[in-house]
Length: 342
Image (cartoon, rainbow, N blue to C red; front, side, top):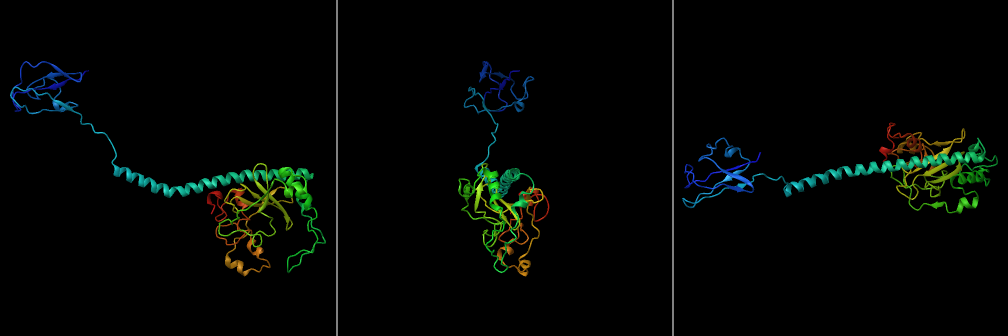
């Protein structure tokens, strides 16, 4: 139904002035203008002024004979924010972002490290399986760790008597590195294009100290000189202490270069020639370590194969592979290794 605008014209300025006669019909913006009654109540059934969707303002006539037309005023208000409201909102958003961004960054970093670990761990398992196959069956780790009966160690200095302790080690290294990247000669696995030398320092699990060969990783293999798999993971094999140690760097040159974060230590199980994890046996306090008697500093730093957020040992992290594989928080024993990295 088409809406009509009701307009009254008056003679004089009073509310009871008489309606002018002979006024011709008009229109406003295409809407018919209908003249009705002398007062708003005399609308002949039409809607009163108060019920119209528009409000009308009448101007006082300048003369008795003047006819004045109404002007429509749209009183609809447009919603908008003031500058102060916008600034306050932006400030709140900034505060929330500052509080949540570190948490989101840490969560994203943990997810990336976990994904890289799973890929690297799978590669390491395949390498050991391939080495076992190339060896020709069971007994690979036992063969590699066969100790020469003529080998002797000075109990005071820890130095050997010049006899190679593991006479089969070169053969075993060749098999292992060949399984890793098909470098099947000794000269190749020592000096070829797959050999990488780390330049950045390696840090402990809780990032308190820098790992050193003398104090922390002695006997565990050279984690600064490793071999790069064709899929990007770095590995190092070291036969010592009656074990074939496997050190895995899941992301190579990328940081953080921390034990228990992207660098992990395993060994080959002699029973079935599979990749085995290393688990912390005891979380020593500084007081307990001082009470123990060690001939060499590295033995003190590696005591208990540490993996916890409180340890001050410079080998803290070499016992983390078990927790990483099973997603267990070493500090609590509950689920959530990757979510709770220090």
